[in-house]
Amino acid sequence: MSEPRSLSAAAPGDAIQLDSYWPYQVTVLADLISRRTAEIVRREGDLNLSQWRVLAAIAERPGRTAVEVVAMTPMDKGIVSRATKALLLAGLLVREASQVDGRVSHLYLTDKGDALYQRLRPHVEAVAQAASAVLAPSGQAEFCALVRQLADAMPATPETR
Image (tube, rainbow, N blue to C red; front, side, top):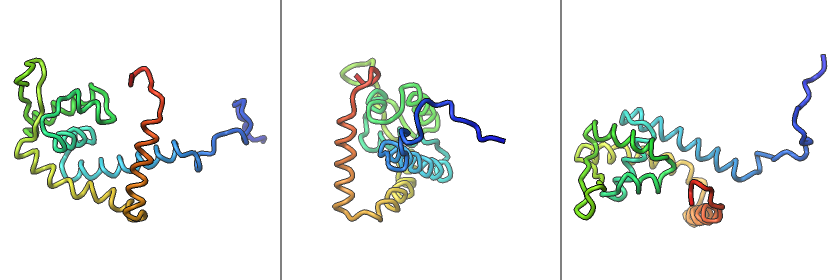
């Protein structure tokens, strides 16, 4: 029996070598971090990853709006909206109308939300610390700077303009 033939027009030598293609490797790393973080926040806090990201974004800067959370996280507005609604219903966030523009509301952690964030934070940070152990502090700073440079150099897509 003969081996199945590839329907691809590209010759095998022309294919992207994924083990040395940095965009693929960054995606693999991000996926590993996301999966481990999701497991931690589910097990320790009964949250999904989207809810954790919203909680962390509000903890980082209390008073953010949902639009600001969308802008600084890798989530679309529908996912942020559902996560925010769940966190509000769970009593982990409160929403306050803006004093400047009543159409805008700001999000804040409740005492319960802050307590959960403080409980989860060391577990989540441990994921990055374990991976960072292979880098010296100067290497960590350099890695972050390189990632920011690469992100800034990425061409805009119609959705990000």
